[in-house]
Amino acid sequence: LDNHVEINARGEELMSYHLSDINAIKHMQSNLVEIRIIAEGENVVQRRLAASLGCKIQENVKNKLEVLDQWREELGLTWRNVGFMGSENTDTPCVKAAGMSACPDDAHEDVQLVSHFISKYKGGQGALREFSEQVLKVNKMSTYKGRVDKTTAYAK
Image (cartoon, rainbow, N blue to C red; front, top):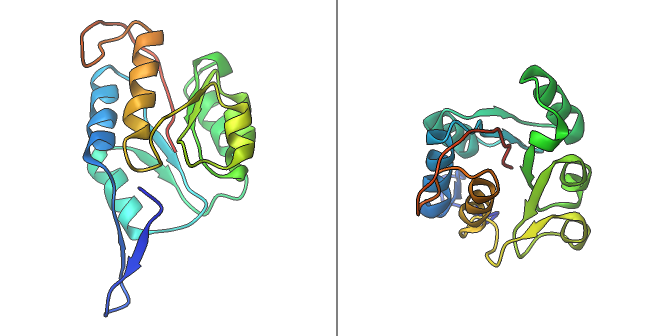
């Protein structure tokens, strides 16, 4: 989601996302990469999007690192095998802990300072697609240009 929220006349929140980011999630999943979402707030749009993509989501999270660590343990991963993309300063501990981390171009400065990769795109506008390509290349997996293997990553 691109962090842009509009409210219509009925008081409903409208959010948007870039289809290339959605396609990136699907492509990662086709390479057996587990995608999970950690959200500070609660929103029906993000829940529906996660459900449509088959992604586990945890909302209203105060301590993202705690959730990420629980998921890491649940999946039997080392921190080296965890990927994380974040944009807010509250994502900084997760970005620091992950073996491969990224942020969009418009991420908080604290996050940019500790990210392994900074996308040239803003959040919700192709940054996740660009990060997914990096994850697939580093792990010698099938990129949109072609390869194969498997790992696990988390997206925010």
